[in-house]
Length: 267
Image (cartoon, rainbow, N blue to C red; front, top):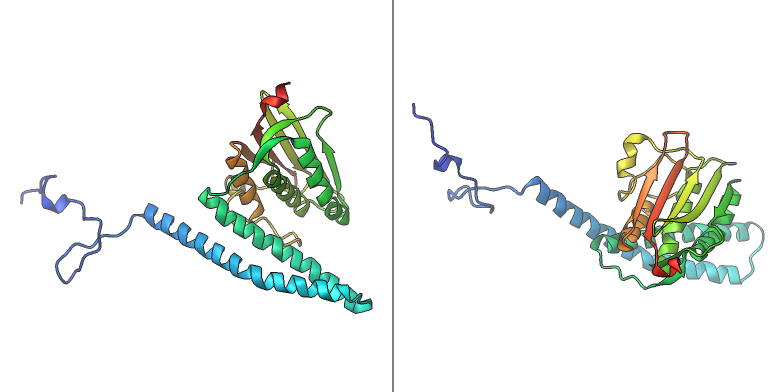
């Protein structure tokens, strides 16, 4: 029996369209890459839709809680309203992160950049997160040196990056642990570090730590694995990079953000 040659019709690739088997037309199937891209687009659309739909009821409930607080409740009622207010704030932050993740994945988020001293943004982020660290009995130390560290950046988005990194450190650091928040300059770049003495990260988990919905072990502080993904996308938009380091479980973690220094930093 003769063996078919490579130019035989038996070896021709199937056309990339779905035909009718009954009509004798060839059937073709999308590649795995196309399937993955299609699935990702569909997932992002679902995330956007769900987050957008959640915003309205959350806004209504937040207004309702504000009305109840205005009536100066006392005793158990006041405590219950305070609990609801805190949980609504947490839910609203998660929804905002979901919306940001969906927007950032398209690369269509505009940056409002300005010349700024990154130490000011760090100080604001640390001040706003200090109460949460204190609540968990953690020491939050900030060290950004005496000299300005100039960058061209979007202040609000940069604050979001630092806030997310600090919240992540607090979430996975035990009571009584320490979180160091520092910055310096190196070879025309500004380097910001968030180092903690917490649970650490397993080596196998490091490559996907910035993936959307990547989760560490339960912490009791909520979250669904969005903050680090949002931080990475914002840093990338600033032409910077973010890295995660850990020596393993129980040995703490370090997140390093590197941004291009502004020419003003050289003056």
